[in-house]
Image 1 (cartoon, rainbow, N blue to C red):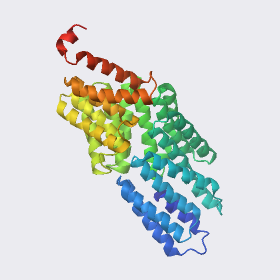
Image 2: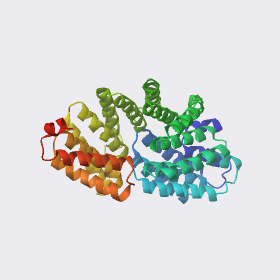
Image 3: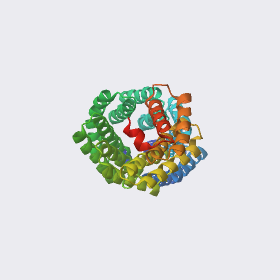
Image 4: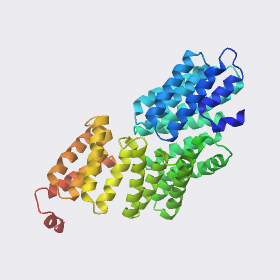
Length: 402
């Protein structure tokens, strides 16, 4: 029985553990839950997170109605949190992940088997909290939360999961410029996750953990100009995701990393092709409106500009701005990068008056939400100064005088 856990979902594993000690529950009730678990995993594998969340909610209701052990309900709630996270509903996901952590902390499993099976759910809850913080750009909170997840996993004997949390934490270190520290953590996590992913019937998430570490390592190497090291790591991450998940958002994110490596080398046509492939995957799964896809489209717009397709650059980033305003609200800090990007594209094609409006909106957000020395604030200020200087003047004459 334990060997079957690796091929099934978290809920299936817990059902196996609970079934050994269950007395009152009907076998038909467990079988029904296993069917729903299988359906959830199919939707998850296809990146169809809305349908996956609907099934997870049905699982919670079924577990409560039939009086199943609390651990099974918590595993299904964890599914809901993961769906919300992948839909870009970070506040909602954070609240649900906290419920999972609190529930695991309060629960007293009746058997050793159930306690062991619950460890994965508890780790998912802790790591999910950290992932939400990172998605909301709360970097200090994310670093601490990933550390807490890794510490729990180490204490619970979940060595691969601990390495995955450290790799996630290293991604945040890249975000705040601590690249050398990040590389050290990725290098430490990489062999642990490679071994775990190579085991017979590893948990499905293990492939994404390994790919995530490779992507982070590639990104760190890219920042340091080590392109010959970065490119094979990025390509390996794509191969892992394609083999394990197919046309899935995990694969799209891996493609995004390789595109970024190419863009750093001014290989804009190559970067454009991989960004377009990533967007195509999102469009066929969770939709282009997904926040991660919008970030990829922001980068794709720059590649359109650099490869001479100015109109597509403008249309792409305008779509991003519209979607982010609709999701987060006008004036939200989550919109500032796309506003700067749109202002810059308009600036580059000599549409200075239109550029000024978007740059001013971005500058107002920076002044309200970010410190004066933040890189985004500085970038916005320089763009505003350049646009103001060229606005209403002869671009060539002004640039010639600089």
